[in-house]
Image 1 (cartoon, rainbow, N blue to C red):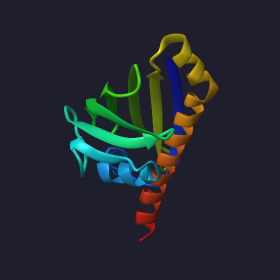
Image 2: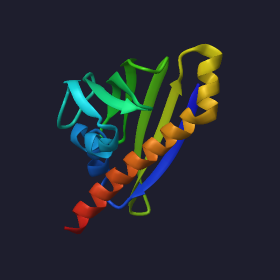
Image 3: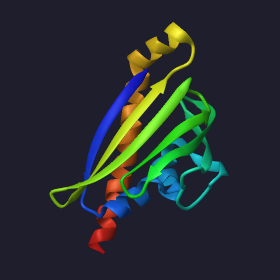
Image 4: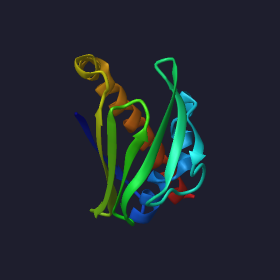
Length: 153
């Protein structure tokens, strides 16, 4: 199992950061370059505990679908999504939020396991973990920009 831990500092309220992180619309915007679209379940607005969304996207030149469900939520401090069906053997993403020195600290703990045993672990080590980390960093930049730009208006 691979684990990616990221911390992003955002100049905005914890509630706005929490809501931005679970916004289907903002997620689609942040993954636009992968043509990621919500095609099932909750397809717009804010996703909540017990709800799911099915994503369609293109990664590595391959069209993929993945359904994730929100399995835990404590507003506005955390929520966890987990893959129900999709390309990984398993995938769990914890989103944690806290206030520190006048900023919201958004922490991602992203755990995933590739299928295909040894071959999958090799792919993880060679490039997939770095690919996923960069994807999450890019998404967090969009969330940060969205919150901080709105705060300046």
